[in-house]
Length: 401
Image 1 (cartoon, rainbow, N blue to C red):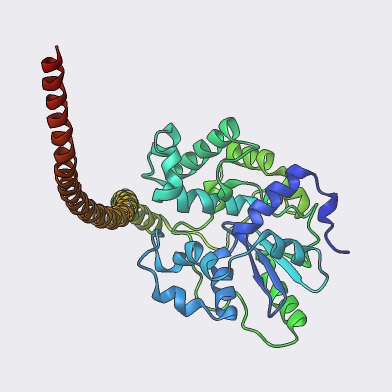
Image 2: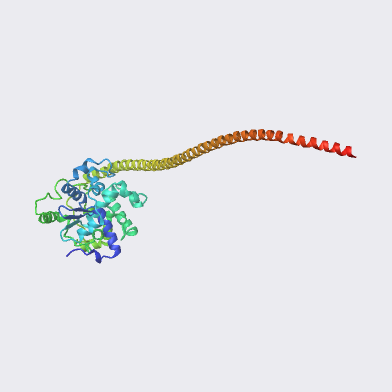
């Protein structure tokens, strides 16, 4: 039976896919989909997956940019860079019968105790930050009884302020994370029965692969789980908040026994180690904050540089536009200059024509004047003769009288 994503509600689809995008790892080559569960050997399984896919060594060589407090833990903020998934990748694997989909779960008592210890008792900078102003976070831990009551105070806080919608995946119920009611897993194995998973994986792959659990235990608890650290009130709170995990994964609600205990001397040493680790983690957190501030400064500087680059680009665009306008103006001026030159040539030609016309007119005027003078002389002689005749007539007329 394959997973039917289409039958999920919109809320379920959103929440499940969101979780799987960050907490699942797909091997296309081996047709595997591993869904990790925080505080259930997930560090070990992620390194195993990285080894299978061939990029574990690359992660080990690039630890400088990790915000994790231990080289073993860098896998958590690095693996997604080498094995990114899309929603399509996840849906294809879930709805296919050709993928082996597996996960691990852990006794709720031991899981929540381990999560509280590594994240809050040791004051791990990232996970503890939302809780540093809470009263339970500052509970003294000088004795084993102090540890038991500090753990109880933490559980009281969860019950009163977060359950059932927990703020951190490390104390969110496993059934709420894995959603076996929606996903058809090939195998969900209890960490207490881990070799069953190794057998199932070898059956699936048909080859002898290294067990995911070979080698040293990674991210192990400084103080091992011990029944004497679980008060009656703590047991009640765990059974109440994690009742779904007990039911779905068939865990007994009775306080489980521990594999090993600590003598009083060993416990004192462990508590001293807690103080030393807290101090180291505090310095590590301060270093990360400093790096974070420097990164913010770099981001702001990059933003300013980008803004200046954009301004320079805009200025260059304006200069290019002005240069083009000047070129166009120069072209217009050159065109006008040529037109003026042509007009000057035309005016000079006209002036020359006028000069020639004036010369011709002057010559004509001279000719006309000469003609007039000549004609005037020729007309004057007859007129004088007439005038003389008239005078003679007037004289003769006077004589007759």
